Length: 235
Image (cartoon, rainbow, N blue to C red):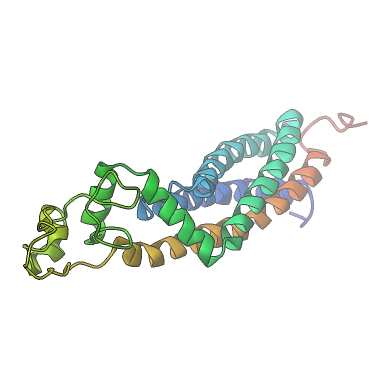
């Protein structure tokens, strides 16, 4: 087998598409983890990278079939679609990495504001926290939260705290304010959201460059003659 010849290009393209299938699962897994970990953010960028992973899996199957059969039409569409996917994935990955700290915090707050009581309860249970940036119990308020006693283990330290029971003392009460024993959910979510953006953007950016190799390899392989076929097939 001569390196750069038909057989070498064929085997290289097959191996590359098998790698793409593995990469697609990595992209889907990392982006899905980021979306689950940052429960309240509803980040469309992360969701778009999941879609890119699914699309890469499908196009890798097309490329694998085209490489095995040396199918001209399949290889042509494979090159075009893979290049478009590279542009999309590269843009989304750069967008994830370009989001600054203030924008990430703003996205987290926006996600909390848009979340219902069920989602906020889920976050408080998963991250063992109470409230977003404070312990305001007014669920109707954009930054309020449901009581934490039944879902947050931190409330076992002081079950009588208003943030845990959901009952504030009357305004004219002489009882001292009982501090909430739990951390805010923002302090727990912040590092998770930052990691989600970095992991998703980094993985997406790294693997997007391998797609250019696939386009170049498919283009070269498509224009080579199959030595087992009719010698005049391309004449």
